[in-house]
Length: 361
Ligand code: F6R
Image 1 (spheres, helix red, strand yellow):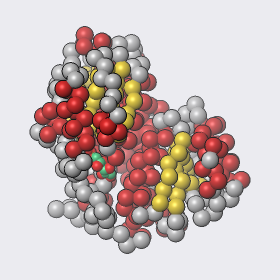
Image 2 (image 1 turned 90 degrees about the vertical axis):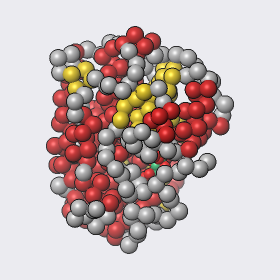
Image 3 (image 1 turned 45 degrees about the vertical axis):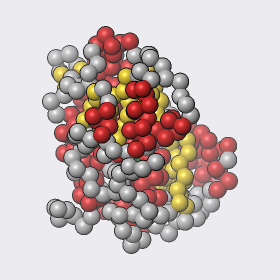
Image 4 (image 1 turned 60 degrees about the vertical axis):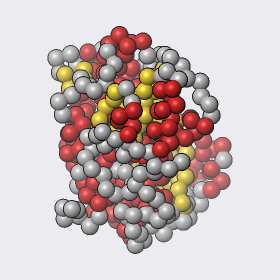
């Protein structure tokens, strides 16, 4: 049942304010400015003993893991990274007893992720899951974890589950942070930011007509560049994946700082750039990248907290706490991919060559 929407993707994008509300519900502990995660199965002593976090997933879940790793590093000050699960399992990784491993999956059935979990467990590691489908194979194989509560996702490409997964990571990062040296005040700041998300998501979704018009302006591109820096880079990666999956327009994602090391050679009017430009400590650096693109006659669509002078168009999104900004910045780019694919007449819910869950190697 599409509930009045023309596609499941549109329905699922539109549901995100409620979905985020669900992942937060019942988990925030205002008294201690922390988060209670019932199924985590990691007590405070174990949480404090974690020396490193390694996140494993595929596709969109891997991208959510990249943002999750950033949240864990900034809120809990534990070194963290995210890696495609398949790469990890084929390189005979060093399995470290002080590392907390986290498997991320919407379906909970992705074979490469499941196989990585099994390999880790064979080698004695502790593995948690950040999973959407309750009772799925990965949920059962892991030692505990956080359910994402995005609700059923039918469209082959993931949207609401991506957003909810990142929010689940914010909760986990806050929880880890508060067992270590994150202050009460910072805990409170992040909690208040999390609570603002649903209304801010609705605010972005109300701008769909504007984003649709922009999609029509850029739908003639043969290829698109997506750039961001630090927290913005995984947003660029995910937006570029979404665009290529459903519109079949080729897209590249690069850290803005890498442009001058090669990809700048691609910039010309026929290759527009989508730039993720939050008002954070990297704003000036990002603006310099926009200038470099403009100097090569590149068209620029910015997602930012205020109008960007160097950009041809800016989608202005509401500000949250810097750590949580990537959650909001991804949402207009889901709509951009959606309306680009629609303008090109693509089969949005069932893109060619793709399946919802990849249960083979
Ligand atoms: C992208 C997409 C895929 C999945 C990937 C992992 O829109 O849907 O890249 O994210 O196949 O799937 P899960 O999260 O079910 O393990």
